[in-house]
Length: 104
Image 1 (spheres, helix red, strand yellow):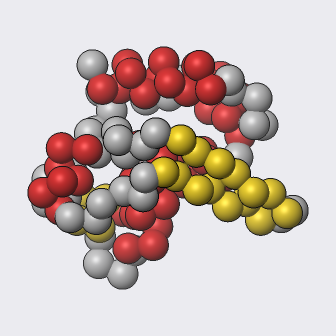
Image 2 (spheres, rainbow, N blue to C red):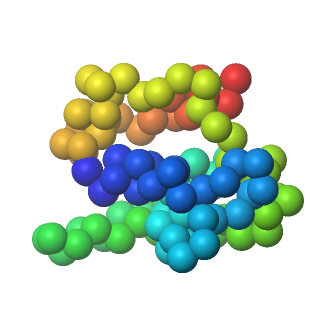
């Protein structure tokens, strides 16, 4: 559920400028970390009701870099996949497939 919520914060990122919406920098950064193309590994810590995601390497917040690293998805995640994501049951291979499709 946490990753789906972080992904939903894409509304706080301006793809044209590579900058977060003013006043929503934290929310935009959470989205950016989820979709950043150079992410090599991800770890999660869970202590209900909190979830912390640790993305490596940390995404650059340079607007020019973000314009190339954060691309607007051509298609949305299906409702079935979104539900699996919320339940924490979407496999990493499916996540990677969805990411590759969005990048194509």
